[in-house]
Image 1: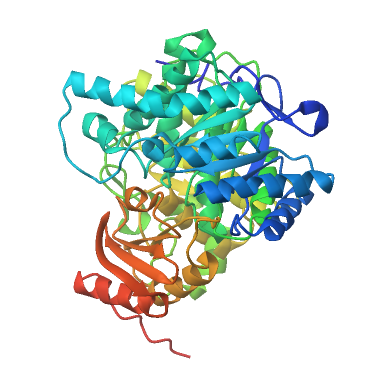
Image 2: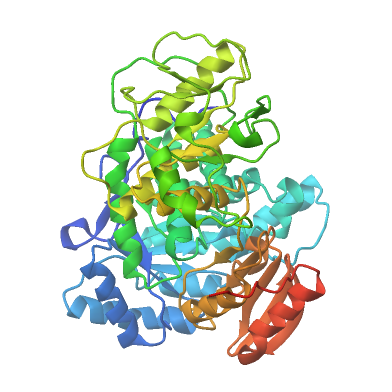
Length: 591
């Protein structure tokens, strides 16, 4: 199977066009030769017409091209009529997408008023009770028939009204039926989406796109690769557009890094027709990150004509860290083998940060680049390596983007029968003017995160960020976002929407203030139950909106405490962490 034309050369995946609204009057065409489209979602109550209109206008003002609005009930879906009418009266023609979970009736109502309907196969017509049940082939077929009966009316209505559709699976909301047959896997996500696509196609409806979202960038990348490979296997007329996003990415640097790893890696491989950066922040900020990220792709992806015909070193559909021997860096630090991915700095960065490092600090350099015994090679030419215990990297000045160069290096080492540990760099040349910190962050995240998701890399060096302390912190944050090491509390936090039952930004800040010292603990903060339990499957603890003013607390995906008043919920979360032996008191700050 192949997920792209070449892992070394950029070719945009050719898709059919999907029309969202009337392109002559503000609508959007997705796919084909059209540029990647930026979208976002408003966060207010859908029943608040004026707030919904205002937030939509604010998004459009910063360049959002498609706006999503949640419709959790038929009543909310019906109010989309008023929202769209007011937007059109004010001259705003941006296409509106209704976000549907659980309620087919709400989808049928919403389709009357908006240009696109997003359905989640995991909870549109299926249950999600985490029940364990074996399905016979006949029982499975009967379930598919039931789904077809529930989904077909929406397909026919969208076809009749000229609507578009997004078939969007989430890692956190696969149905029990899919979970029991395929497990909580990328394959399960893909098969769940294909079931709904087959129903659409059976009714000659093709105006839809797919999405495969996860809060884990590594899982998200695998899912999209597998989806595209499966579509390619099914035939040339399965060339539907793809929407990219890392769901529940969080806020600040962490949210941007996770999104850049997942979205950026796929964009560099030519995949993706619409994108959303899901941040626990005000929605207009998402568009700025989308724009900055898209602007980096031409630089980070290989547009040369260099012929690179060599099998990659990695399986793109199943993550496995590239096997290497363990070696020792200066100062007794171990690298490669089963060791964690190490953080290397330049001597200039070391001189800036060394005076500030304390013995117990988790964020500290683990090697100085200029002092390492390292072989620097040009992977576009033939090269030799004396032994497998030689640390190796791509030399500066190679005329390839870093992702391509390091993939090629790993592939050539494999062809030579060598497994040398590899030091990754975020860039192979420097510009006279330092990059803006926000751009340096995105570039480093795309380059190093993409390679780590391929299983390549035993140590990393970030040089695009000029600040010594900032580059060191960025290195650790990329490793944490890529799931390679844990040096601080990890948060899975959804962006707000009309389903959210508390102020996500305020509550997230409150939870972080109490828990951010808990190294190695993962906490999920979910505004509602839609993706909650599933996205918390690999989180230690979950804080989930259960009802207005009430919070449910989870351990993994198991609800433990219910209907806790919001005013008490953060401290009850701390109590729950303490009960499970993962609480430590924060160190006293000395002045």
